[in-house]
Image (cartoon, rainbow, N blue to C red):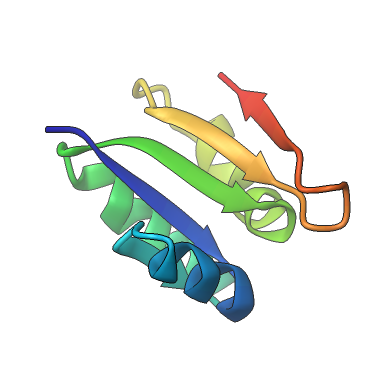
Length: 88
């Protein structure tokens, strides 16, 4: 069965973890975000990765450098009325 992962700030990660997304990771900066994203990306059981807007900006260079097909990636914007933005 496919899994969902979230990478974001502590509050967002905690919210999703309580909601049942067990693969929720809190990061504090670019290095943390890149490390966790590589870990999540290498896990073949994860088919959907959601990230907060700051995390997306931090990992964008990895996305641009890598030609490997990525799972679906959603950017989560807390300040924008809880809308999700799809990034294929």
